[in-house]
Length: 351
Image 1 (cartoon, rainbow, N blue to C red):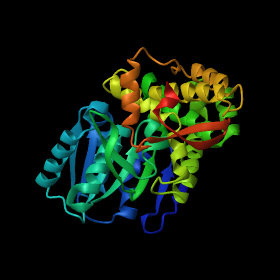
Image 2 (cartoon, rainbow, N blue to C red):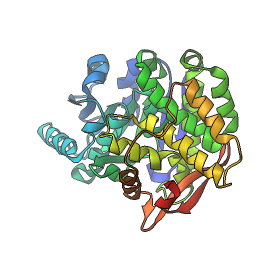
Image 3 (tube, rainbow, N blue to C red):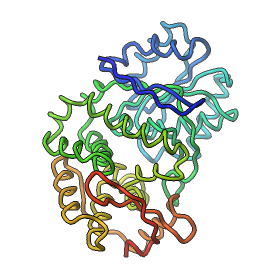
Image 4 (cartoon, one colour):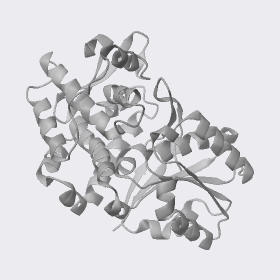
């Protein structure tokens, strides 16, 4: 059964389509929103092996000339060098502003492809086809696109909304365990910041098998929550910041591990627990919330303990975070489970 979510952003509005088996009919679906022109697919080498040929063929059968470029998988590919390579491939394919770029893959592909689309020729239309749990519930929705610098994650980017998002939850059946856990970090975050009943549901499901039985509902719920927040604050200047719960510390952990020691979801999981443990101690969060977060993280095999890292380097990386405004740092805390708020402090909060 197809589910649709309309993201109402005026001229930047678009639909999110959620349906099992959708990846097999993408050509027909995309033709409804983009009737003619060239299509350039950006994917990664792993996703390309599994879906690259079938997606390309579906588009060709619908009358689209198709080009494709696959990047090496992993966060290490999300940088300005990779963006420059994509620009060269787009030029070789003679892509114009009347053509379409497709991001086929996880969060790295979506962020990098979206960034390239937003900047190439000052903007080419693009579509998101997320193939990981993390990308389906979070990074493919909302229009944040970016690349990393050595100093930190997502420091060069823009807000650039896709023309549509097509989500096929059935592709998650073959998702390796570490990528499933990675996505569950963002799923759990949704319950923490806005929906205590959703958090209770995740507690009751007790693992991947039962989550997959409810996966269409879970993906829809996360996307709709994000839709509500993005519609109210597209440019991330106010309450949209609550989506960054756990991210300030999580991004610093990812950066110091060279984007390979900890995945995004693992970093966020540690960040959610650690920041809530601190805020509870300060009397800013209802007692017992950090313990509840810890239990849920354990259910889904996610870390919660801060790794052994140089404390001063960690604080320096936190200070480079894009949410750091001058000497002030906006961190996202929980008043209680399901209710987040923005707290202005500085890096001393983490000492």
